Image (cartoon, rainbow, N blue to C red; front, side, top):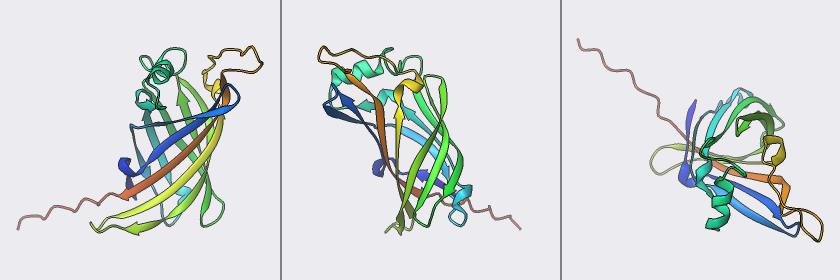
Length: 183
């Protein structure tokens, strides 16, 4: 069953250590994709998402500019990061592992997201929505994001581990009705 990502009710967020002592949190505000959610057999679900890396927002324009530069995402050469699912492992009625290929800067590596089914609801407009939360942790250097500065007190300016948190609302796409044949 085809579903649209409801962009106004979906967040793709991340957190990474800054100077080893605090976390910088940010989000990507532009993304698109398709989800073929199989409600009856969730293990057959397919996800294909593209994230506009230029839409990064950490609430600091200078830092966001640096993250868009060749030191990090190099958005002029690699404007998007993509995720295409390869496997869904259902753990129970509320939990699954969604594995897929994450591509950043033309480097593709497997990523497994821990997914929680939050629920479904029928809207006042007659549509049906499904909610999911997903989490993962990656080492940014695995995707070629290696820029850093050593601190004189020891450690690094930017942590290697990036925590990813996603809240997604999917809206069922109305199936096209066959056109009536004129008699």
